[in-house]
Length: 199
Image 1: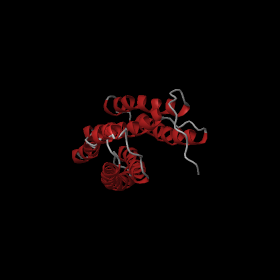
Image 2 (image 1 turned 30 degrees about the horizontal axis):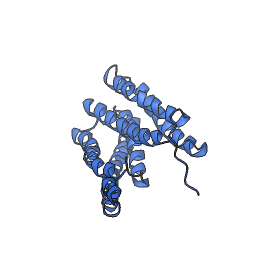
Image 3 (image 1 turned 90 degrees about the vertical axis):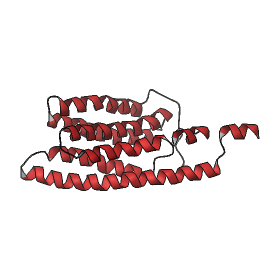
Image 4 (image 1 turned 180 degrees about the horizontal axis):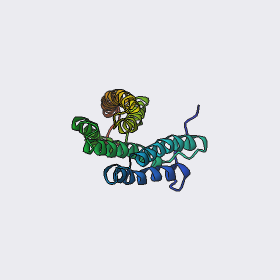
């Protein structure tokens, strides 16, 4: 299968869907922390998950893969993860160690950006393991939110939610470790841009 062309276009359907997902982040936080409208908060999360799937499909099938989209998609994923763990921790649905552990991984990865930028990269490609981790976490949080209660349905949602959360967190850190391996290989094989211009 040939590589898809990556363009500099801004006004595309996938980019619009990514922007819509970003607008949903503050709405989700307000719903879960303000009026505590958990049902509507779940709807926002489901719409986010659908648009996450849809923008990737449309970008590939309609040849609308863009550099902006490649940046917006992971940013939206991380903002939803951060907003959700913050909201659930403030509601005492998940422990604070989990709410801190997930953003901490992303904070650690930000320290790799100078090394990437010196070699002309904005980010490394997202690999399957990272996507799997995000998939698990984005399933875990709605289930944990749904599990906030005493009924049998709530109990089942908590059990499955914690299963996804544990696997997702483990995969999230595993993906982070692979990211550092990729970065090490890049540093060993690609000279900084300034070094290349002098040669």
